Picture 1 (spheres, rainbow, N blue to C red):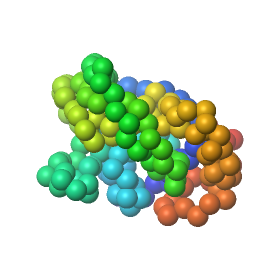
Picture 2: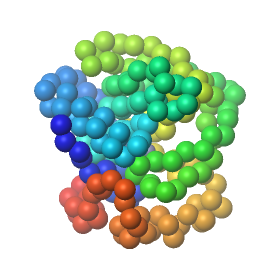
Picture 3: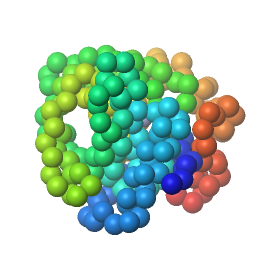
Amino acid sequence: MALLPITLIGDKILKRKANPVKEVDIKTVELIRDMFETMRNANGIGLAANQVGSDKAIIVIDISVIDGHEDSKPMVIINPKITYRSEKKVFIEEGCLSIPDIRAEVERPAEITIVYHDTDLKEITLDAKDILARVIQHEYDHLQGILFTDLISDEMKKKFKKDLIKIKQRKVEFQYPVTSHIDYQMQL
Ligand code: ZN
């Protein structure tokens, strides 16, 4: 197991669409383990593979740290597709390990249906609502190259502009390992 450095807003891989997983080989299993370790170390409840520098369509989620969700099991979501989005939308505050210390209310569908593969590449259909629907949609967006800051109003974007530049320049204190600026701008 290993802690992986988390990519930050500005890293180009966060703007790229993920590629489907065709085989869950030993490297994929290791990646998934490392994603869980990296997420938990950073006190996150969801993580997409491009947040640790991989282009694979993989999400890990564990919302059991949230009050009232202690019984929920850790989830590995591979090759997801959202097949239903409720008309009803809700505002919920979001944060992101790739955009530390920035939080904003984001409007998204309240309920979704997702079709994905588990680690045996078996197809699963899941209806999700409340916080789980929210986390899945946030992470699903990562696999499309979309960050929550892409979804907020221009006014909010303006408000965060200086802070985002500081993150991109690594001029804030990070509570967990992050990528170096140069690596991810130059090589990816
Ligand atoms: Zn995120």
